[in-house]
Amino acid sequence: MTEGIVYVLTNPAMPGIVKIGKTTRGMGARLNELYSTGVPLPFECAYAARVDDESKVERAFHQAFGPYRINPRREFFDIEPEQAIALLELMALEDMTPALQEEANQVDVEAKAGAEKLKRSRRPPINYLELGIPVGSTLLYIGDGQTTCTVADGRKVEFQGEVMSISKLTADLRNIPGRPINGPAYWSFNGRLLGDIYEEAYSQAD
Image (cartoon, rainbow, N blue to C red; front, side, top):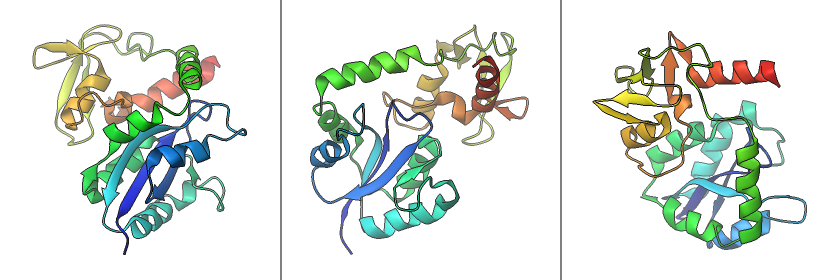
């Protein structure tokens, strides 16, 4: 049994794909290895945690998400990062994400700028009105099946008298303030996930 780090990585050049792996070394070295000449943009650390047995935890992930594995010889999965993060949080001894994100930012400053530019050029942020969800609509947090918020305008929701983005609210509810998170993946409207409504709308537009 070897204590180590299990990580969840994303890459702006590969939307919708997550890499799940392990390392007992510094994350910076691993990110440099992954950022090869065959990858146009560096990987980003969505979440990483120190665990008791990194090999056992990694195997558990690969079994749990086996049906979504793109290539049996590679650690890439066609899932949302939040799916992997939710599972890894249950086995984490220590959240290593902030430190590893800092290491990731040192990999290639110019490439990071390119990654941010690519993200901005992709599909726009969620707009409830464009998705047919009117102001005043109630959204349900699937994290507990009870918490609700109200659509305040096209891009913001209201929760306990405060207006904010749904991603910020989701991060606060999950006790991970400040961490990037796909908020719509955790909320539903009239029984449908916001993420599914968004994807359906923009897949038709593409």
